[in-house]
Image (cartoon, rainbow, N blue to C red; front, side, top):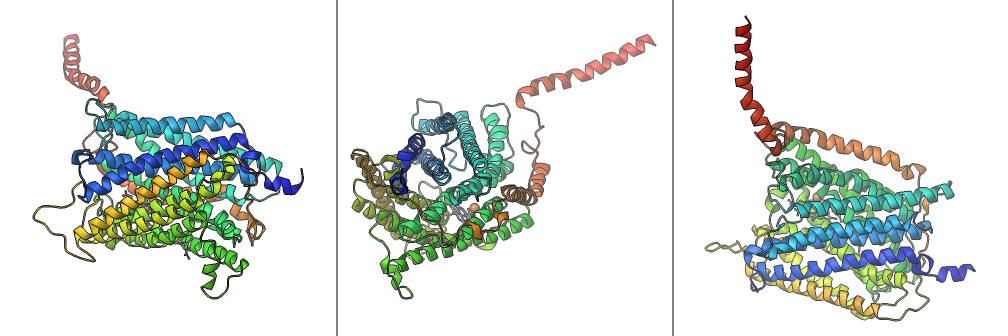
Length: 593
Ligand code: HAS
Ligand code: CU
């Protein structure tokens, strides 16, 4: 087969088996997106007081948990596993080792998320004795039905096997290509997964050792500070687990879509290594207001967080430089004039660019969060949801949706039903989020709490800042509604795309970087070295705080022995029988004398 024809083959032509897995993962992701969006519109109308007729305020937490788990955990992760499978197979140009293993992890993840989802949704049905209103952060003292935790455990194990699948495929490739550098997309997948193994170990421990046995009644109580700390050990790096696939797309797909090439492959590798090193030893920045952790540990976490800004600032530079290169290739000129020479009519391009622009704002609100003293002002206010709707809700979600317009045809051979609707949809997301998130930030500064069904309090007026409470509520509701409409358009467009006939000629090969992998020092590809340093940093950041928490509050909370409750009767029987036994022995000794 000639090279030209080879280049014309899409991913699904070359790897039909893998394409099926990628499609299944993306469909799982979009199902979660649909469910999450429904709870989103319910909430936005409920908490702003525009319409409170769909759920009662007591069901608000069931809805909020469903919204968070379906969108933040499920939509993101299913998209990630689909994208990573595509990226590894595409960049290694090689099939996965054993597709049965691939389907196994997919099945585990789907089964786990179904269990978790069912346990949450059951909370709406009074006749079923099951609920999991623990929000997407699920730490104690909130307690869920055991099925919630069991589902999460199965889901996480599935993701671990997925990582192993990609690592093994890379190792097999390495044996076939001993002298070659790790292709960039595979490098990004491997560093992300190495970070994921480190981060998720803590939440797996928390679920399996504490939360699940506690919810099953095997242990009586847990140490809440400990489960919170283990959660945030995972809860911060998980945000980069969502972001890194978006970065993979910004680095490797966006420049191509812009008509250019990636500016620097080595710099991209540096960014992913920095994420591997620095994502985990910072989780305590979510706990600045937790009383059980010493200020010094919080300060260390803040310092590490400020270093963690670096990879994103590097990304802003590299990605914009690559896009500018594309514009200049198309004849763009001038200091900013090149911006007009970009393909703004392409939904994949405009969507990813708007996602990047929003992330610049989300990054700045992240810097505010990260400052220990300013954090006291915004913590637990609706500012924080404002922040993460810019980051995970736009930088990540909008990038995933935009990239779908580019990726879907290559894994199905079907052109998108309407690219014009796609363009409208991504712009609508941007406008909706700009309204909603800006108003959330403003309300947060007024002190409006997050995670509250009815944040208006009788006899209390929030101080007017950049607009009154009511006015900002309306902005939130309009923004939230536009986001819902945007999601409906995205899903509708995709469903109609599925009805399109298959065509040929949809292949979009990715060009090599301007400065390629050979310009990068070999040490960058030494994954063992980076994992070693990452683990060391985590130990340095967490060993002392965890030891202090356990020392003060015990493994299972203050005043509780470290044995399971079901053993307690045996211990009691033993303790009660001991004194009479000792007496009896004493008497017997007397008698013998
Ligand atoms: Fe965050 C809370 C600090 C990034 C998600 N964050 C959260 C929560 C979530 C979340 C979900 O320190 C709430 C958890 C909960 O329920 O309680 N966050 C940061 C910092 C960063 C950051 C310092 N967060 C993220 C990302 C997320 C995410 C990414 C998801 C994907 N965050 C915090 C802190 C809290 C927090 C505290 C706790 C708050 C509290 O008190 O509860 C940084 O990583 C941000 C760095 C980013 C930048 C921006 C660089 C700009 C770029 C744009 C390039 C432009 C392009 C387009 C490509 C420095 C890369 C150009 C376009 C043209 C037209 C030219
Ligand atoms: Cu964080």
